[in-house]
Image 1 (cartoon, rainbow over the protein chains, first blue to last red):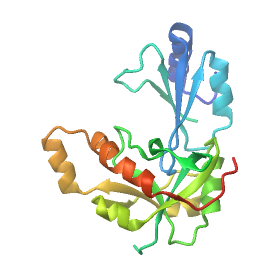
Image 2 (cartoon, chains in turn purple, brown):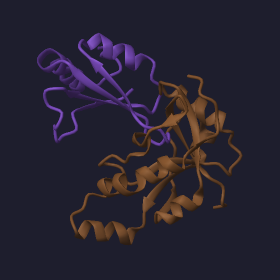
Image 3 (cartoon, rainbow over the protein chains, first blue to last red):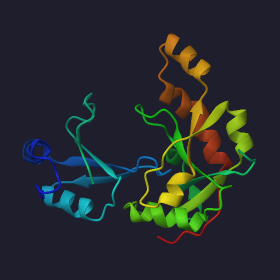
Length: 80
Length: 135
């Protein structure tokens, strides 16, 4: 995970999610863009980097461990 | 607002559009759409959404305004989130009226559940493609 684009606290949470609870379901939302989210299934954190690198401004990434899909907090939310 | 249809960018496989493209999430107040009556070409909308990183065989579909009226939805102008300012200018949300939202709240019915049960299938059935399907 490139820490330059993710706040430090979130970067730690993202790394912990992949280290402790992989695989991770990645939801990419496009708020205010009149379209549905994209979904990805990632086993490694590097796969998330690849997804995020091609997102434009405004996209929102939400991560959920597949072991805890009912997380009431909405999982880890990061920018593009 | 004129009688022109509303637009949404959807993933289409072999010309088919799934109801999942029109679902509301628990934290959303209304379904995100673009107006078609403000001179913004649907291809420009498609490019703006692709530029944000949306993947897949994308097309723009149109839904007649009367469908939203028949479903009791109001169209509320809100800022768009694409990288294109002109596209963002024509963004609206289709929402239930405040009285119906209050009624749902008093009955502890989640708004997104009601939307997805009643509205989503009707929007998917009414949606007609207005652009091609290149990804």
